[in-house]
Length: 482
Image 1 (tube, rainbow, N blue to C red):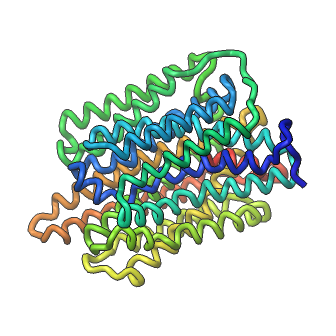
Image 2: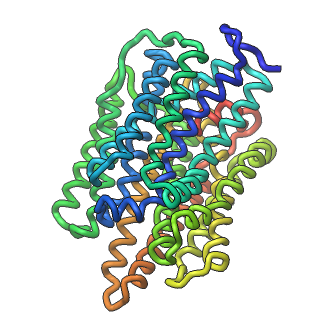
Image 3: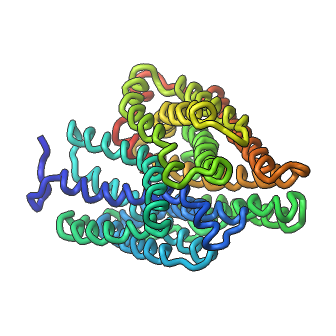
């Protein structure tokens, strides 16, 4: 039976309110995917700049996620959640009013920054609202379902809003929901005290790592236009490396680092984070490129394109409820081999997509294999990332795996987009549609390569601890799926 908060309210009301905020964050990772062709046309995006609609959000979200968690401890969870929610909703309105590509990209980055402060504070409120026991486990199971299924639901919702209302409502929809949720959180969620007295925020660390990733993404996105071995591209990538070195140096010298480097001495932490980056890179890139194929090549409307993704949320929802029990019984290592292989098989099939493709013959097998592989992989890689970690660093390990997910996705999307653009441009003598599909095929083969690399890491680097050390709690799973 559920307990009550100090104010006498049911904890499930608190849970519902903060989960709405989290759902908005997860939804906005993908809701714009199906609207991309329309956005490109109306705001005059180029082929190379279009990916920034997705990557700007993911980069800011991943780059400042650990900082957001630290801020929640310093300034109070409810305060940080409300601040982030108000900023997120306001920015969503401004994005919906955007009149240029540059304006939309900058605002998407600000929206991702707001999301980075919402997610960790929302989850920490859940963890402090429910004590150890069945109620907390049930709450975290629901939370995990939101984290895994929200992005897939965004593909469906984005398609219908784009076709039957307007693509701008993919962002406007956040405004009334955010306002109502913020008012109810202010009235019904208890105020949380600050848990840290030291006021140190590692702003230099967050700025350095995010700037490094932005430079990497910009270099890869401009490679097809400027030339991969041109001085500007090599210069930008060189700057990215220098910024990353600066981040590592800052973390080694800071008294309160954003990312204590000592945690990477734990083999599974390093291996799992290295795995998550290419896994999410392949998935995010596949969403992006498949959307362009469905609408620009097959001529699907936004609503039909969104509906095409229906297997994703269904399969992910089923797997999110089944895989934890399987991991508890068999351990996580075998699933970190099986899962990436299933996803890689689906992406390999996409490498053979024809110009005149058929949904049931050419796409549906992939739309079954990829979410099946992702569903088999996500929870086990989180289990690996948090196993063997000291209790006082469990939150850090969980935040790191989500950071690797978002940053890997942003960087991978830029690589896959660059491959697709380069191959299409080099396909001289072919009609535009055939050249475009050749580029997509090459990018899907690259995405499959990401998955094979992740599988090798799972097989060769990840170790399955024996006994209690090999188990992962529901709390650890949910903490890493913010």
